[in-house]
Image 1: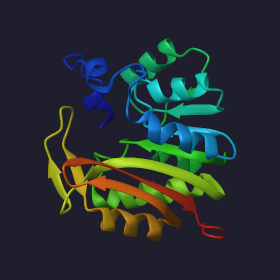
Image 2 (image 1 turned 30 degrees about the horizontal axis):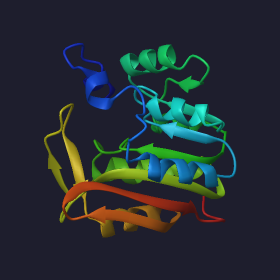
Image 3 (image 1 turned 120 degrees about the vertical axis):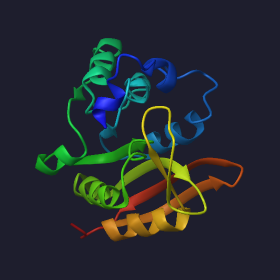
Image 4 (image 1 turned 135 degrees about the horizontal axis):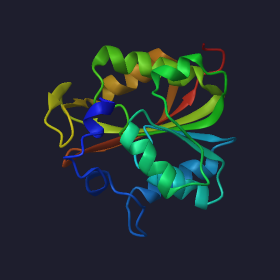
Length: 195
């Protein structure tokens, strides 16, 4: 999947964005979440680094994780003071660091059901007990694949995503979806004692 984001034919910064605008509606979700996180934050699937850099400018201790060669180069160039790890969620299984919060903003949308379950379990191991996960995804009435500007992506029913998170060791504490738009997000807490 990292290769798809690395294609020079794709205007990746135009599609993903490179900076957070003052009127970006996602700020109303991400900024309060980050302010409530106790400890450092990891932005998985950081892309161009726009949210990682934005949260760093707000004073948060935050690092990015990005598997795409092209995107990691863009992120490091645009945000030289921020640490970006050139790795995937799967690579976190070999990491010993635990974060207070993990931001997964549309970073699991290309994963099949099996891949997503494995990724969520891996993310749970990288959060301390009580740590917070904020993830966004495309919601729909059924789990299905659809055409995305970069590569095929998946829609998930909200209840199925909640089930997946619970199975991986999370307690869902907040969720938002709107039948008029496919965009959805969930806030979850790492269940104590689950590893």
